Length: 232
Ligand code: DX5
Ligand code: ZN
Image 1 (spheres, rainbow, N blue to C red):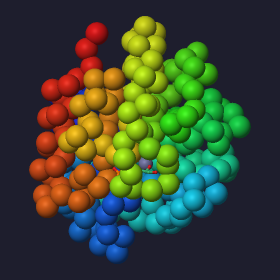
Image 2 (cartoon, rainbow, N blue to C red):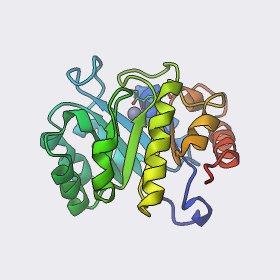
Image 3 (cartoon, rainbow, N blue to C red):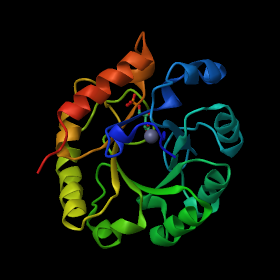
């Protein structure tokens, strides 16, 4: 659930720091350094869907128990049907699985909502989004990856922006309330173009945790995104 006291951010921009860039053995300390974040972005990788491995439900359950900020879980895993519901059940505010990995994305999204999480679907940079147009309202958020998933600290891919703009136009045309999220290489140099293309929710790992003052970095990113808010 987004913080109750920030009606001003109802339509975004939301800044979700990715703890992939945090210190895994000082998680509680690092969570305290991002007190102003909207959500904590949690990257779950299985070394199958992506060539990297992070953590699973047991670790995320502890983060959930410790974090004062709601969790935004990003599953970079195969067989999301098998694992995604567990993250919703442990209390994650949102659970996002990859379109490329899901056999029945709508069925899975419905299951996640039933449990009480926001349902998200993610697409890799080369994956088209047209198949989502007719089912936009089955999802609470769509994540357009702005790097190939798997690692933090990569360069933003501007070629993903037309796809994001297409989604934003379609969402507006259909009066959809779906949130549009970007993830990968988001920082002061790139957030403006993602905001202009229609993103309202921004994941940032290295740009936040690599900063001397992560909360100040969050404020800076939020201000830039707000200033470049998508207008029609
Ligand atoms: C990449 C992850 C991202 C990653 C972003 O596969 O999904 O969430 O942590 O890191 P930065 O912001 O450093 O690109
Ligand atoms: Zn992510």
